[in-house]
Length: 521
Image (tube, rainbow, N blue to C red; front, side, top):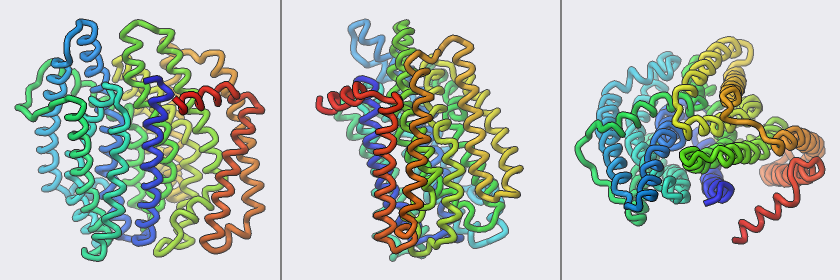
């Protein structure tokens, strides 16, 4: 499958998941607001969600896919089947299952101490602390299911079957929406219902991927764990990748720990801001990284450096073409977005304003977040997992320092600012190392188009700012008027960027025609 086609497939399903996720978050915000129950649930949800991104979209895929793809490629060259590749996947499954079983049991027993470490500020409010312990004990087994789903997804992606894994987050959102609508009235609090929804989602996602694996002819039984040379190599590569590829998620975890020391509601403000921020990060970053890794791995193994460099440049071009305007838009219209999405029920205007300020701060880092995903993939495809961890740890240390410096004057907004700044440092260092090693060079097309993308994004931001001022009466009105104003802003912004991109040369009509031809095909 061509790079653009794979990105389109994964991005399309991810976009569907994000839309469902917004529906879910609208319901959660209305029913929970930004109080103690909300803070407790978001801590409980953050932990398995962190592992979902680290495993499904980071460490496991980055380490497993090149090794599995190499065995598949070897089988093709030798004219044999894929028995060796399947055997490797079965070994990885056994190690993963039994290791995580021990982790889950230990975590369930020690959950009070884990919560004290993740949210030390909760100990000052016993209600939040007890709820966080209860909720996290319910959600934690999700780690088992989502990690196994990550393995299944890596196998399917290596077989160039992308949509099945890309659809799994949709199942999570459907389960949580069902929990809010169906379970909430039956349990002690909506937080209990949401926690059980997360647990159920793990089972559903596992069953979904298992069924599609069998349909693809892959049989992965659970055997005794055995540390073969291949599994040892997998484990060695996973550890650094968990930090290198998932440094953004690690930064968010640090943000949560520090935010627990701030006034109640701070964790909720950051959670909802990050949910909006995750739309471009998830749709673009995950899609590009997932599609690029197996393609680059094949090209580098074949010694086709010209093709690999072209793939890197086109992936960066797609990423920047989409993330630069996304960042500009979220900076300018963060308040209308948050107001329309979340301001209802228990989520009042004060919570909306606090969340919008955090979103604007996160938005500065959107291009960097996606660049990290894309540039890290270049290291992983070359089977270098050490360099990203060194850079990731440096960025993490900077993030912690900036958190402590900025949280005083800016409260929760300072935490979002620190995440954006440290992410740019991470992306910059990754690019610098690749360039110095001569593993990557900006080609003439990307050098020509990048400044034009920046100009086009700036012009779009100006149009949005003027339009927002003109629509102020609508934005201050009722729900229907606010939704109408936001729709006009989004459509107008897209149109403005499209026109500006064509006028400045950031994109061409040939690009549009190629996209349309691929869609038609």
